[in-house]
Image (cartoon, rainbow, N blue to C red; front, top):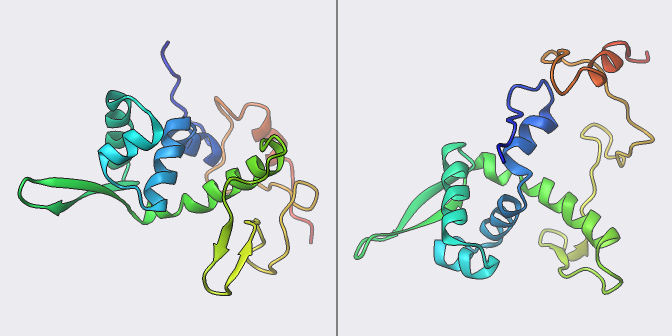
Length: 169
């Protein structure tokens, strides 16, 4: 089955999920960001086929999300390290983790605790306003037109809806 590319859709969510919405890709990034960086270790941890893992890692390197880094010369060995672009996926993974903890835990509770090293406390990831620090929810936010917005595939209905909105003064 051929997958439709979303890279040309004027929507940041579409463009991001074009690369990142694959479950294996999210789990690969989880592993790398948690310190599992060697090919064999990732394959063993996830139980993923080597062919699928190689393809996902190649795409992540090609897209600048990960980079290969030599950690041993004889024999030559490399591992995968998140770039700045890759590290910026961490809040996305935390948001997925929080949602999964709340809605998909099956009553057994979260599989991990998130510990904030700077303050020394366990915490939950939350999405907050960069200006005031208030929590962002579907009820207290709206979407306004941005400079890259356009109507087209993937935004034929939502594009005009957003374009008709104006910021409240």
